[in-house]
Length: 250
Ligand code: PGA
Image: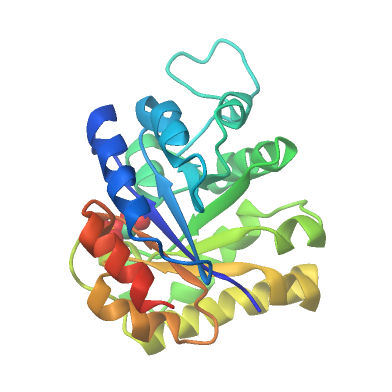
């Protein structure tokens, strides 16, 4: 059984004080252990949020990292630095990173390998644009992104990953993929994993859906056989909404 994982991607939102007060409130909701909850604050809030999460069953994630351990990379953060703070998950290859910061499948692959080398769990993002969906190339695009990001990994490494299928046209737009469409793409990703890394890795890898996940649509999405969680942007910024999503996935 794959445990459902709901991760809140706060993007460039929340000061340190706001981040800490959010998790203090979220902790009070006591969501049990059926669903794994993760919050992914900005780099500046990671240390304070790590401290605030101590003793809770909410995990800490980062939104990006560089693949090198250290070096002359102005403005970057390394996997060693995240590990030191108690970060467990790291979102890699989010479409906003690809769109605004030129990230490629090759770069994402370097980051995935570096994260694994430091014991971080990558949340690898893949997803098509609206044009690609309309052209009928969704599965082709998502397959290329998945294969590119996971190149040279072992089946054991793949088994421990989280992949997030996020159709770009559904991110921040209020437009969610239907349960069936999301299931179809998630299933195709699992098939690609099975072909490349074997059935044990495909059975174990957790595949989230992301793109306008809200308390009202979470249950339908998560009840699909190949959707093992959600990567949540907008609705992860309010405790009530984020806790509502977790509650509706139990
Ligand atoms: P959204 O963002 O929930 O606001 O659509 C999802 C994401 O970008 O991970």
